[in-house]
Image 1 (cartoon, helix red, strand yellow):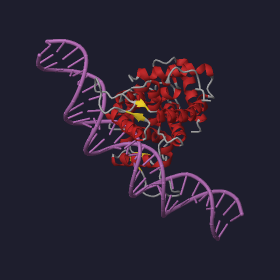
Image 2: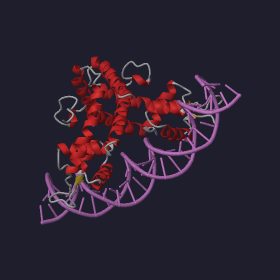
Image 3: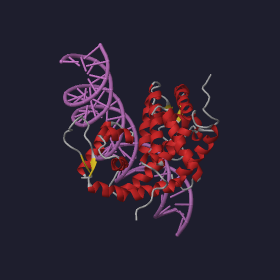
Image 4: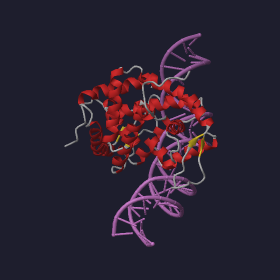
Length: 149
Length: 149
DNA sequence: TCGCGCATGTCAAAATGCTGACATGGAAGA
DNA sequence: TCTTCCATGTCAGCATTTTGACATGCGCGA
């Protein structure tokens, strides 16, 4: 006996997973185009945004925050370092984690790019009924947690 | 004057883009683990699902349907071909597109893997209020279209 | 005190995906 | 008819990401 689909669906495009991937891909594509003008990639921008909010995050922290592996985050940080947008001590005082901080240039670059990214998000949610937005955020969160993160 | 954020948000994790990425990453990770037992990757499974529903799709069709480039889809098809899960003619009768079809082994593999994937989707949307599900699908669609696909 | 577990940073290799480019086949319009 | 434009399939090169592995530093419990 085959497993029934989770909800009545005519075809694959009716599934939540498909829509999720579609929307996610569209957002990623739009952000890629917009950030190219600022000399940033999406992972780079994500790291800058997290660091602006929580200075001193470690490489592993940023990896978790951007949903990639530590190794990938390490490559991103190397790029940001070479671009002079972040600083990272050569050795740690206490533990093993190396706290990352934005440089003035990094903060400036982030603030410049933020406008473009916010405009995209605005365009994305502009057509969604405002009273549904809170529910949408909550549902996305619920689904992520149900999958065990 | 800086561009205001699209909606009141304390931090980055309150943004729709962040939640979207988080949920998408969680789903991708769960599907990866589940499909590994069936010897399939997520892109491979996606192609099989599309082909089961619409036999004869071309490589370019599948690329659009799985939100990757034609080149990436081509690599996926090569893997499926070598695994004996699909067939593809060496030359086209009419146009230039080469119609792809599932082999019996491909259909069998898909049906076996489908149960695991549906279980994940069920787990994902299990905690979401049923009356919100339709709205959620619609909102995701609205956002994707607003970004111009 | 001494292991043991655990998190972190990093190296190497492989897989995956994308950009750029080119040739082919068809269709639409001059 | 012929020419131009577009979609497709494919090759090569590069960037990104992941898997696997290993060494280091800290804290907790025996």
